[in-house]
Image (cartoon, rainbow, N blue to C red; front, side, top):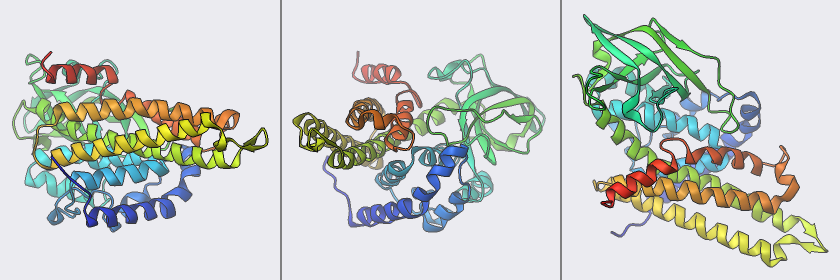
Length: 380
């Protein structure tokens, strides 16, 4: 199935690249140092139509497609993975289930303000003892009149410390493994909603992350997504399929940054009387990096095109996630090798991309889990 970037895609790419370089790049050093997301960016990006470009115009979005979203994520990640991660958690995870399955009232109360950058969203799935095995989550939601009482905890939640609401996965029917899960919109002000101190991470430091604890947390039944008990597993799966494609762009943006930094450093670093870019060993590394970045981008866009066309991309989305995140590790290792000892110094940006990119083979399904998915989809 053929595809190509449209003129609108190219214009959008140039616009978001300029925004990222001019308005985000100057914030990165302080954001990383303080491990704090510059929250004003949510509204600022919304003003330009960059925060939630894939939602319909009537809801305040840009009416764009999945390829445009991939372009956005790649350009953001090229500048800073931590800032991109917070945006992705907001627009791709915390808002998407409401758009796909929420009621009109839920969209008006939560989705529209999220698109405008007025409310910050998060997605609560992973637990201390449940990660890739979603069906084993232990959070429970019990009906109590017009409310549900939620008990449990969620771990490694991006935007957890700063969110206005979080979409929480919990069992309403624990006897139905997987099928008895529901998603609930839990507002920050809900009684029994507690946020742990911010978690300190090796990379993606300005994506603020926390454990969320729900102790007899009272949530109105009207905040259940889907309107009936059960069905949450499919809602989660649909959200994560889109997210896996997004990870192709997160990986590509990080890889592009590492490649650009390495090429520039190789031109400037002189050893044995000449720039190291003149040595075959360096040139071959850079050539392979350029090749792999192009393949990563092309396959991500191709799968995004299939997704936009309504094709079932369960297999392809896992292939994108697996191939791009694993290929990124080789690119980052080569980038660090080209930089030598300087790459290990904090003042060189390549080390930040190296730390940030290491996370990608773990989150939203480990590489091993995606191999299982691909094998199953291939029929073995």
